[in-house]
Image 1 (tube, rainbow, N blue to C red):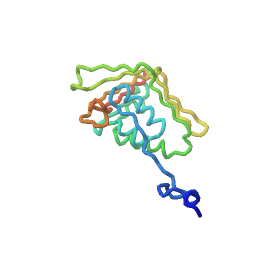
Image 2 (image 1 turned 30 degrees about the vertical axis):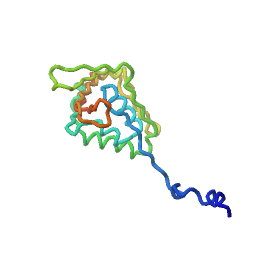
Image 3 (image 1 turned 45 degrees about the horizontal axis):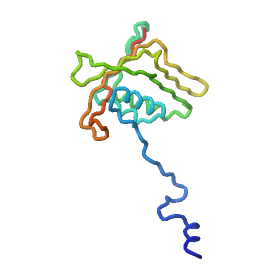
Length: 177
C-alpha cells in the first residue's frame, strides 16, 4: 500500500481516537467594563454556563430581592453559592430548552459616592431587559416593572483584561413594586 493511501485509511497520527469528542475551551467575554459584565452574564446564563456565570460574582457577593407586596416572603437574600446552585440546576434540568436574557442597549453606569473607590453601579428597569425560560410546555417571563441594581467591584491584576482590571458583581438588588 502506498504511504498516502495508508494515511487516508488510518487517519492522521494527530487525530483524536475514533468515537471521542474534542471539547474546545469556551471563549468568554472579559468583564473589563460594566456593560461587558452584563454582556458576559447574558452569554453565560443563556448558555447555562456555570463556570462563566459564577466567575462574574465576587466571593463576598450578596443578592437581595425585595417584594413589599408579598406578605409571605417580602425579602429573599442570596449569595455566591445560591447563584452557583441556581445556574447548576438550570443546566441539569433537561426540560429547559431555551433561556433568553438580554439587558438591552445603552447600559449606563455611575460611581456612587457612598461606595468604595473603583466601584460601579448599574441600575436597570426590567422593562429595558428581557428574561424568559422555557421549561417543557411552560415559558416563564421576568416581570416588566422591577428595578434591578448591580454593584460592581474592580479586581486587579487581571491578566485576561487589556486594562489589567476586571469587574465582579458584589451586590445585586431587585425591587418589585
